[in-house]
Length: 540
Image (tube, rainbow, N blue to C red; front, side, top):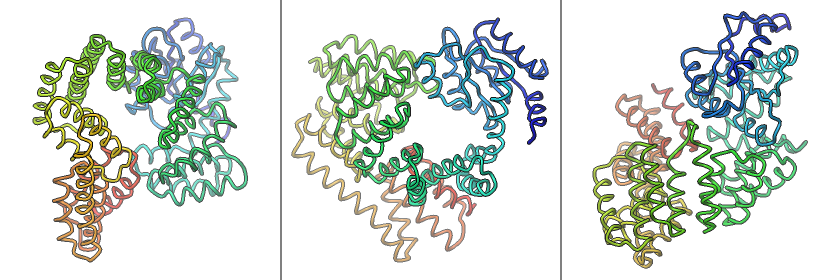
């Protein structure tokens, strides 16, 4: 595309200018008009909420958004929500604009990953130059981004290969995107080989991070930590690397190192509510309650206007202040949570924490009453609850005399995650805390063995070619272990293989799809999901 064509494209694009000062909206609109943009193609918004409403009504080619928008959403919140709700497409150029040069603002803006970051005042020359560069890159990646948005990752990988043949200017970026897609689709061996090939010639940060992530998927946390420590030492502002390094340290049981790593990242960018919550969770786990309380309170504040805010920060804060012997304040936090969030999952988790607060404060009668309420709620609920919350519920039930139901919850948790060492250790800890250590050890081992035997039975029959009986065995196993991700994926693989050999069946296709979507809900990062979904698409 020539410069003239670029200028025509810029002039004919639709623009949204977001700034809380009328004078600045006028200034930026004037800059756009001086760049040749038709005034009819320029819309404005005065705050984050108005920007989201405007983006919901119309598609824009370019968004110029101030970072600080007064009270309410920041520019980072607006971009986060626009991406989350698919209000902007892959071809949209998002430019964050601000008058501030502070590290907090710059890093906070960078974490939301806009296409560019400009310091005011913005001139015509600067804006045109930046838009031309962004447009050129968007043009190269638009089809790839569309394939990714449509979750057709295998097609996106193929497009990366095709583009790389002629597009030398973007060859490195195409390689980075391809490696990420290979990892996502379970082709980690291919991704590993590519990362290692890149790193053989020079230290490339994204390749180091990618290789470290593969080490973590392989549970080689020592190798991952070594790579990531080198990466953050040489690239102080690479915030994503700090997050993975903290995760690797925790997996190795090095909680002090994990805390130090998160502290380094928060010193660089203190306004990430996701990272602040990670610090709160870790500090609560290690008993550093003042630090946990500070992190959770900051999380609640930072996430207030985020589309990704969740009740987990409130639950963490409630548990923290309860552990600091402030039960009434902890209950007040739960009350605030219930006003801000709805849904059965929130109510179940809140009820569990409420009971534990009463138990921790010595109010055995009230704790038992809440445990009985929770038990009744669980009997009538079909909501999927994460493992940590289930363990907490079981702890409350066991501690208040609801032994049978508590044991049943933990048994189901072991059977649904028989190979998750961290989860098994956490289950054993619940048994220890509630005085069921010996009985729990027997239950864990028996449940784990039963789960593995049931999972292997169907797989062995399929290997022998007896698909009909294998599928029956897998269905029986899923009735007992409906949240076992490995079982869900194995059953999908065997059913798909059966149909590839004997022909597609509409009912079986629907069953496989349900199993795969359940597995994806339980474990969104599970790599086999995408490969199996693509095999299913072929059958359809």
